[in-house]
Every structure is written in C-alpha cells, then in structure tokens.
Image (cartoon, rainbow over all chains, first blue to last red; front, side, top):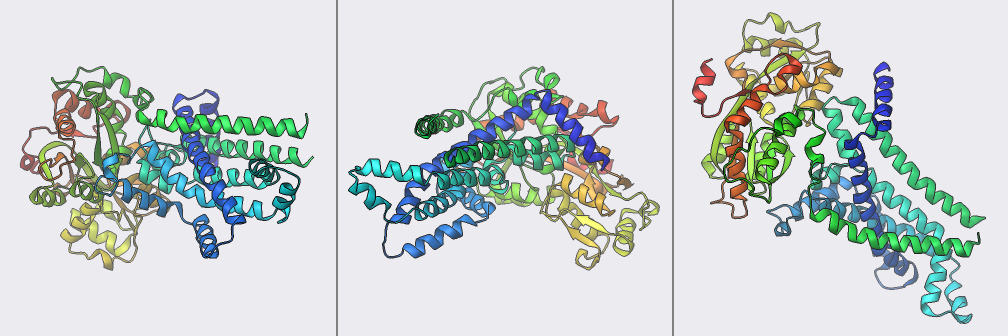
Length: 231
Length: 316
C-alpha cells in the first residue's frame, strides 16, 4: 500500500513538473488516437448511416459483421496489420511497419466498426418517417442529411467517445505494429507496460493518471455537448 | 446562446479539426523520429553522446530495424547506445525488443536489418542457414539464479550448478520466461545439464514475458528464476529476490551483433546495418558498455569483449 501511495505522489510530482518525456508521450497519444478516430468517423458515419437507411440483401450479414468487429480483440487486429505491413508481408515495400502511420491504421480498423455500429443505432432510433417529412417540407437532399445528422447527434457523439476510448486505451495492437519505439511510437499504454517491466512504478502510475485524465476530459467535453443539446 | 449557433460552431470546429488532423498524420508521421526527445531524457545519454563519431563515413542517414532481446532494453543500455549511433551516422534505429527466438525469426524473414542477441547456440543455426552474416562478439555478462531470501530449496548451499538446479526441481518453485528468449534457452540448457526434464518439475511456471515482468512474478510468488545480472541489478530496488547461485561457466551470457544477410534478403539496409555492427565494436562504444551504470550499482553490468576470442571467455 505504501508503494502505491509513494508512486502516486512521485507521479503527481512528475506531472506537475511538466516532465518533457511524459508530455511528448501524451501528445503523441492524442495525435495517433485522435487521427485514427477522426478517420474512422469520416468512413464510419456515412457507412453507418447507409446501413441504417438502406435495405439490401445481405444487410443482416453486414450488420452481424459490424457487431462482431465491435468486439474484435485489438491484439488480433494488431497481429493482422503487422503481418500485412512487415517487410516480408504483402505491403512490406511501403515501409510502414513500426511507424505512427501503422498505429493509426490498426487503430482505425479497431474504431471503424464501433463508429459504424453507434451511428447506425443512432440513425435507426430516429422516427423512420423523418426523411420523407423533411422532403415534403421542401428540404433538399443535403439539407435533409444535415438535419438528420443534427437529430442523431447524441448517437454520433457516443460514437466518437466509443471509438476514441477504445483506441486510446488499447495496448496490444499499438505494441505490435508500432514497436513501442522510444520518442517515436511509444504511447501512453505501451509506455506503461515498459515502465512497469522496468520497475519504474512511479512513472507507470504517472502515465496511468495522464491516460485516465485524457479519457475523462474527452468524455466530459462530449457529455457536456450532449447535455447542452437536451436543454 | 442559441442551440443553432452552438451547433454551427461545433460543426465548424469539428470540420476544421478533422481537416487539420487529416493532414497531421501525414506531416507528423512522415518524419518518424521526434529528434532529440529520443535520447534527451535518459540520464546517461548526455555524456555518452558527447563522445566522437565512430564511423569515418558519418551521416549515412535513413533508418534500420534492430531486432534485439528484452534484456538490452530493460537494462537501459540501448537507450544510451542508440542515440549515440543516430548522432554519429544520422541513421534512425527502430529497436524491436523481443525474445532472442523472435529476433532471429525476424532475421530469417528479412524483417530486420541487424540483430543483437545472446543465445550463441541458437544463433549458430541462423548463421549456417545464411540468414545472419558478419557477426561480431560484443560483450558478455552473466546469468544468476535468484530466489527468496528464505531459500526453501537450499540453493545457496549447492556445491555445483547442477546440484542447484536439482535442488530447485525437488524443493522449489521456479518461474520461467517461456518466451523462446536467450534466457529461456539458457534455462533449458541448465535443466538438461542437470539431467532434469523441465516438464517434470511440478512447481515450474512460464510467464511468456520479458525479464523484468518475469522477475516481478518470481518476486511476488517467492520463486526462483534465472536472470541476467544486468536486468536483475536494474530492478533490484523493487525486488525481494536475492542472488542464490552465480559464477559458473555455463552461466556466461554472451552477446553477438549481426548483419541480416543482404545476399539472402534483398531488402536489408546493408549500409546502415554494417555501420551499426562497426559501431558496437568500436573502442568508444566498448568503453561506454564497460562503464554502463557502474557508478549506479558499484559493479559492472556488461564486460566489453570486441575482437576477443570467445573460447577464452569460457575459460575464465
């Protein structure tokens, strides 16, 4: 117990002192996971919308795949991306392995099913006659989409939270495809693993606190936005 | 503030954010080293980086993948050496710390450019296959058997290494790396030498993790384990484990560095890998290796051995 308390105090000291190493790792984590989440939104929101609205053969199959993807272990996705990007793999010539781009790729794949699933659920929760209603009121196609998006915003924000929350906290895929390179691809989760195995428990705790605060801040802001709309 | 205005600001902000972030990974990831951050935070790096360049044909540039063992990473040695190398040659090194088995597999597939490993018997196989070339002896340290102070198996009193292993098999719990690492290979070698089949050792468990993590498990379970001295000393302040058996010929831990054969694997960055091998055996780097953390621990973690005869080491 004493060790935990000491570690906690030392961790706070490190954070308050503005330790450059911790700061770089935190900023890198936001960059990588933020990029992955935004790319996942760009792809996942339209796909989720289409899945919710369109009726086509095999739709159930696709929805089933999306739901499976939502629960796919990140470390498996990491393994597959690693096999694809490693030098002897099919995309080895791109030299993407052990880069931040490789991490963004893996995290993107982890986040997309979550974003698709949440968007789809959000759009399905809207009254089904709403698009027709908007059209009958003279709203153009783009304007209709825009208004529907506004109505489904609660769900879309949940999609961001779920996507970012999943990728910022995952460790297996980032470790495998990023290589946990110091000053390059080491992010908060992989740094915690490293510091723990090195016995640097105070640094590990400090990184854990930063990770917690980061997830908390993102969720707090988005929750505030959600509540704002409800008022 | 009206909802409409607010939503407009939110959407505008999100749009701008996504645009800028889309551009960011390209800009930020294109240059995959964050420069000085890599070494600046390591206590030893400042002094180490001050030593002169080691290769006459400095500034080769580009990047390379070094597959290595967790022990060089967990002890912090590479955190000192890699920034020195990058400063001298401009080559960015991607250090992938895995077990020796995995490091050698990476070499066999051409997924790495250079290998730093400590399992000579296993390495020999890959040299014969032609996957590793231009090998050089770099340094050695030694393995120690550590265990709980109470020493339930009486390992401290063992007359020989074989007796120590037999005692553990009979009366102790043992935590194994179980990850095809050099240390794992050495452990299996020790059981074999003692005539013990590890599968028959009842209280033997495998972590499948690196040395640091395995030491923590052994510490918590009050078990014996085999560790390289460097990692043990680096972590000792958090451990209750003590050295139970040391100093035997079989406990020598010898490190070699290799170029992944460019003749066999066309993609290998031969110039960078060769520069790294030359760097590791250069007098300046050998000096840094010999002095690594001596001030902190009061004893040598690695003994530099470049250009020595390996047979002489085992005689000592």
